[in-house]
Image (tube, rainbow, N blue to C red; front, side, top):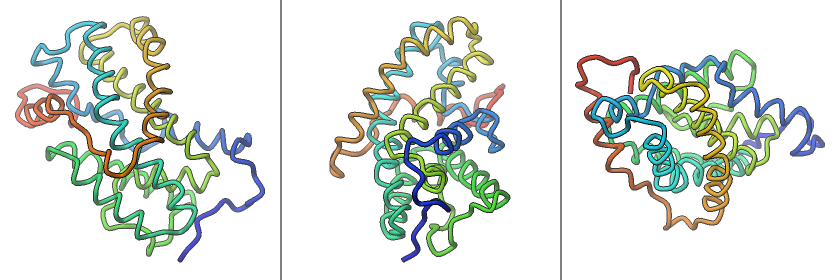
Length: 235
């Protein structure tokens, strides 16, 4: 069993280096191409389901409550400790489970592409996990959790960081495609910041048999996007 730890095991979870590592991981400037994907949001605009600031806030709250809380965030809560403990079986189990939750080709492709891009970056930074620890075609959450563990980021903070990065990405999509004004995007951040904290707390409390996203609207929007005539984003 290969242990995945910081080069300095004495670094506290809340250390400055860990905090900076988390900021690097969730930065929009991270060169993994996250800006190219909308997770079905572009189709929600095209279909008229989301047409203004309030409707976008409601859409994002729904995706957060019924999706991320019961899928990505809950998996990160299991993955980060598994990476630290070198438990490749747990990592493979949850990587496969999350892949099975991707209901469309584009959502699955986004997960694989972002995971592959993050792995390439980690390799370039001499941070790549041992090959025997990685599932084949590991998804983004799997590599995100690995990098968080290597950086000494606490599990709770990694979950918050992931939720924040998701929200920033979705608002960036809205600013380009709705379009949403930048001040409106900041108002939505203020509206949703408490929801991010609450979502992480709920995800931390979930048992394994309580996991599973329920986002039929997002799945339909994503499927529609595959044949959408004019689009800016890959999903």
